[in-house]
Image (cartoon, rainbow, N blue to C red; front, side, top):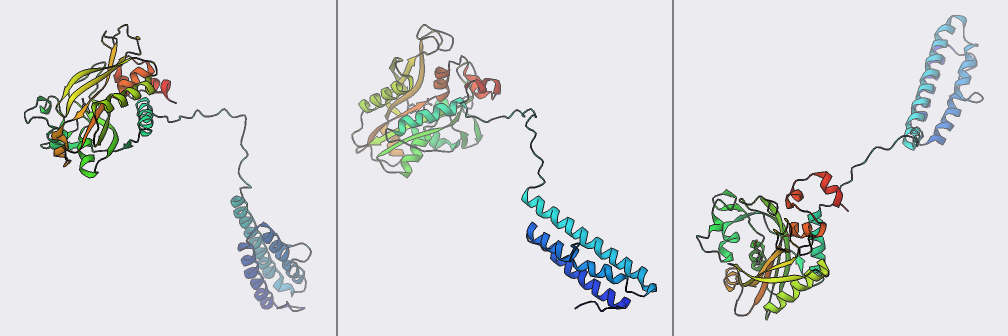
Length: 349
Ligand code: PHE
């Protein structure tokens, strides 16, 4: 539809409005910068742009119509130019052309990097050693019932550990587990032997708070149940662990007592802070107790529904914070639970 040779004002208006609609659509929908440039040349170009024809036609209009037509022309031209600029901006932003270049002379902002807690590092290292021996990781709840924490583990009903002074109770029959041993029972209820698991987790005790005890601390439970497992396996496996983890450090077993193991033994390693000479961390003994262990009591196996005539096994409970204390030479175990970054940063890997 071309503009007649000598258009009336009505012709002019009809045609320029048509051009405006076409031009706005072409510019606004341009898919990329090339398409936008093509649309610009088509409508606003200085040589062949469609708007040029309307500029020229202004001269051919009747004198009285000129001001009105001139206004129309200017409006359409501005609209098209604005549409061009807006679309160019949109496409440029999408392409990243307006991103400010980085100022490489700016000082860097200090970045805080998260890191693993020393106790976590130790738990991972211990788990890796036991994984080589066929152990897998099992977990249990921190809020436990009395039965899992005590009853199934062969504690007599009036055992002093159940006293409010030692155990944190959440409700009548719900307590914060005082050790990870309930995971032994939960695991044996779910999986038939052979069972070899490692169960890391937090435990809670109410009465302890000194340089070697915290009211919440991590433990790692180990459990190995199969036919024909003996105390020899316990001693060999824990001895192997001590050697892998501590290298040449001396280790020793001492007879002990737990309701859920019989016989029971604790393992000490030569204190790595004083190398056996005696220091506050080892209370002058030169030895650091790192775990309790023993042959799982038949009553525990039976409570978990395992035939204690057929299966035997052993278990241990380690204190990874004690072990971290030895590994990193930390005098007071409570710093592991203080969350003071000035301390944690010194060990973080
Ligand atoms: N549960 C015991 C404690 O917390 C440790 C332990 C675990 C001992 C397994 C023997 C066997 O002291």
